[in-house]
Amino acid sequence: MEFTKEDALNLLGEYNTGEFHLKHAHVVGDVMRWFACDLGYGEEAGFWEIVGLLHDLDFEKYPEEHCTKSQEIMRERGLDERLIHATASHGYGLTVDIKPEHEMEKVLFATDELTGLIGAVAVMRPSKSVNDLEVKSVKKKFKDKRFAAGCSRDVITQGAEFLGWSLDELIEKTILAMRESDAVE
Image (cartoon, rainbow, N blue to C red):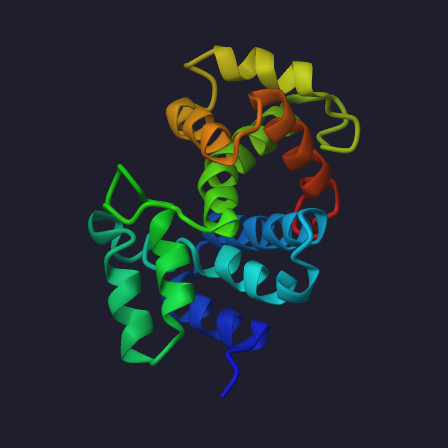
């Protein structure tokens, strides 16, 4: 039986109730869908979106077991090992030793923290929007370690390296992806 976006949203809602976590899941899901299409994986865009939606499944209720508890939850439900590996791999080097291997996993690793940073930069702008946000504005705040201090610059940089992209390219593509997200205000 196919695991659908609706199934993913229902599962997400079982373990997440906070507005911040739910919004983040939707933004990352939308960003992952955009990247799937941009990188030539359009036929898998729905799967990439589900990976984005569920990547932090366990974070709200089990922050100390992040990327570990979610594997247990998903396996108990008989979910695809590709989904389990992909969602867990974004915690590589932080909470798990599951390295991002597929391009999809590398995109998730690179953009998870970056969407938070870009969102924080956007709300500081007069427009409060990503629609007029430029790479240079994000780079300026990227260099200020006190700004959005919870967004790991090391993970973002490592993610760009995993993908073989420059930091500017990663930021530019992620801004474009976030512009397409219904979850970004």
